[in-house]
Image (tube, rainbow, N blue to C red):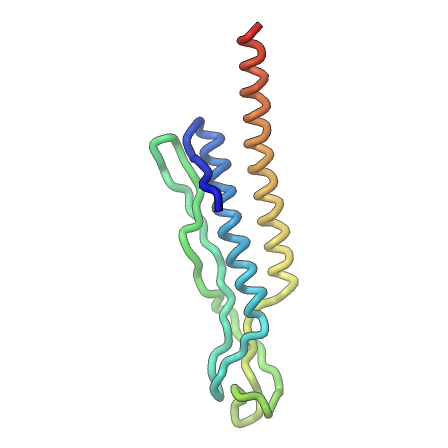
Length: 139
């Protein structure tokens, strides 16, 4: 993966840090989707628990940047599925299933992609303004 230099003006540095944060957010969402069917392995065992990314704004020498501080588990309850033959089935035949909702993950992914695109647009506009300024100075 290519390293992106975070130097330069405050707007560019903030946009670059936001790109990285949204990329990390997309990885968490992808992990949630990949584990959406991961039930426990033992009777009554807990299935995969959805992860939620947490962001923070950090002060740097050049201004501020946004970064993903970490992830926290979604403590919403697990759903139950009647599957008496499953290895994780309780005595009543119920299996706890992950608290991952595909629709929510899809919407979160779309939101992250749009935020990524918006920050990429900031960088593209900054580049265009820099080129215009250089062209004016060369006249």
